[in-house]
Amino acid sequence: RHHHYDPPPEPAPRPAPQPAPAPTPVPVPVPVPAPRPSPSPSTSNGQLRTFYMYRSQNQNNYPPKNVNTANLAGVIWYLQHEVVITDPPKFGIYRILRYKVQTRAPANLLQSGMNFGVRYAYDSQDCTGPGSCHDMYQKYGHFVGCNNFDSGYPYPTEPTHFQGGIWYSIPSQGTCNGPPTGAFDCTFSYDWPPAEITLDELQGQAGRSFWDNPDDAGANERKVQAAKRLFQQKYPDTQDLPDPPCDFNYDRFWR
Image: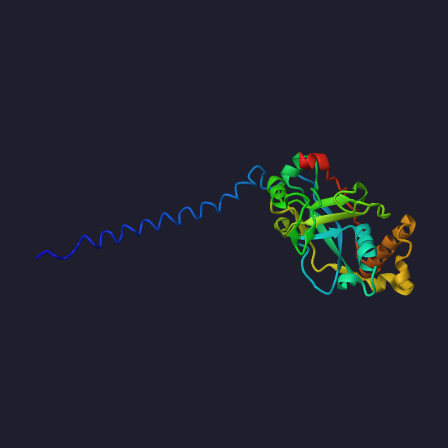
């Protein structure tokens, strides 16, 4: 009378271990990206740089992550070249924001002799190159990128008549709180909220004629100085922070 069919329950547990190994491989790919930054120590001995970055902006407020910014000459050129060419200005832009920022280069980038990497283009917060943003961020860490206008790479490629113009790129993965350490994920920090001036304030009584003579380097320098004075007037505790040298080097970076 021992017809209790004890064997059938045994196969039931047997399939249970089979699903168990199946999930085991799933977590394995997750740690794989983590070791990639391991060639770099958790911090770097790069110089901590404190300076201003500027961005032209519409009414929206969001942190400077996965965006392009500029020095003051760089943002005035952008406004003159692409924004105030229509009335009202394009993209709803009506103000210039100023962020007080700090940067420290990751160790792998420093070893290549640079504090700044290539200046990537961010389009709607997507990094669009040049080259593979992902691959270079994996190689060097999430660096802040820069380009001197005079270099003609990657853009603008034509003379701007703005001496010393610089653009920057900021990956969100490199943003951290407090002074950046130069770790792969901590190369950039910023003060919030940013200072701001409006285009109307900047143009003043000159109105849109403020932007006249776009090919005159002297006239353009006066526009930059006017913006600088306006920030100083609105924010009397403004520190005079010079732009750090944009030391991105094409040959060393892409080798």
